[in-house]
Image (cartoon, rainbow, N blue to C red; front, side, top):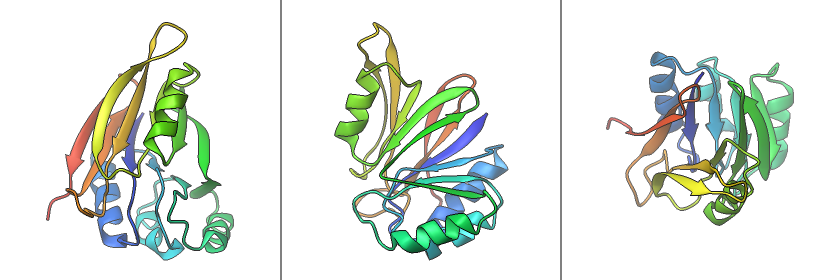
Length: 170
């Protein structure tokens, strides 16, 4: 299964939709958003592309009531989880949280195949040693909005656990 991992869209609906469009064209079948969506309207253009979106809110909460309302009325296309999410996609256990330090801590538990975080606006992919004596993938897609950093997102192939940082074309 291929997925699009984004974060920190900060009301930049066009940038978010562009990343989802690029990922969909390359075979992605779901989107994971690691927070700082801000307003529900930010998600509408991405939702129009038809991929299921799994969204948490981050520290710039925006209008959580509208996010809940949009989720309830989406026919399952949008799943809004609140401050963090526990997912199973493509047979992989995935934890989604906004803050990198919480993401690192969750990776250390060994309970997850993949931990996704955001907040720092710095894209990164790493393997973290965990308490079970193995390693957990920790990925941060940076900021899809390009705020104080390049506009980035991550294309993930869950079957092979391959991750690639992608830049949005200007």
